[in-house]
Length: 494
Image 1 (spheres, rainbow, N blue to C red):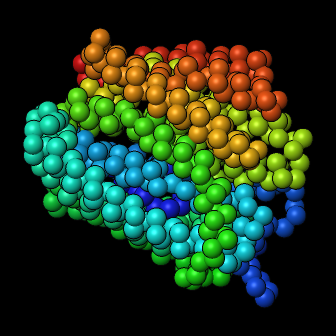
Image 2: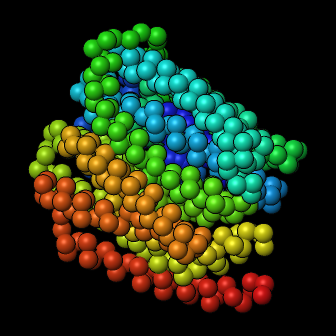
């Protein structure tokens, strides 16, 4: 697909998200006594470091999206839309549990001055393993709860939650938590040091092999289990390669009380933020799953995935480059933080806002070109959801707030987004039906903009000229999309 079950501790799934080539010149393998992992690149200048890391990150992301689109095109011709709806619920459950159990391991290692100390890394690894098992057990409880609700008739009969096999799908898919828990912390250290070449290779290799397995099993079984099994295999490959391909000292089972306390203390606001992110990022699927059939839910998931591919461009670089870069600046050159913040935002604001206009103009045409007639109803959904990209440009605030030591800011923002989502979407559904709910999903975060500007004003991170300037990208994107619609109309079936 397509449906990203991945719950690996590092990298993208999707997601997150999810190369080949020579090792980036900015990476230096560890050497000498006591080497603990991928060490910081040589002092060749932060500009070269960032460009190298960004290049590897984007090459990996683009190649991954090509695989993802190719997988979509193949699998949607093998499997029926309702199977993707079932898979989307399993994905939602995995993301729900992943966020619920998020204790900020990655940012804790990336921003900590002792992030290269092997004892600190081993402690983080043990915590990560425990979190994996806890995540799987939590998923089992959720699966049993959904099954119980369906058995007692407490969900609508046409709802995707009433699918008899859904609890077993959730339990099987979420075992990826356990597998991902054993991923090496050398993976996190590579992010810390902006050494992303091996990260890209691992992500792409696991994704490509998982896709091959998904296609073969889908063709043989015509079952959603093909997606479940292929994701588990992909997670296993990624975990193994994180130990085998990334140079450095292997992890071992040991835990230091003080290190564990430091990690957990840092992560407390991230845990609060993640708890509400569960609802702000997944509330749409929680709500729509109760109102929509498995087919409609699968079409929604398809449209959402296409929007997420564009959103993921910024999320990929914000996560892989933005967090370590901005954390480094906050530690070493606080005066340069504002300038780097706007330099990071500019290209992605233009891309995301321009893409919103583009998708609104030609969303239906894109669906008609890529998929068969069974998926045509995803077109209007894609056009509506395109407006979510207006708010996606503020995703950079997460690494910014981590870098300046204010994780509580995005915790507060996620609380506000969750409250708005669970207020506005049901209200819109009650008044305007399913289409109204879609518009509420796309625009629910808009009222949080004043709160973002307030937080930014306390750190000199606002520019009204910048905010107005980037909006010109929407009509430009709309114009380009309209041109494509006109050109495509000559060969699309009527």
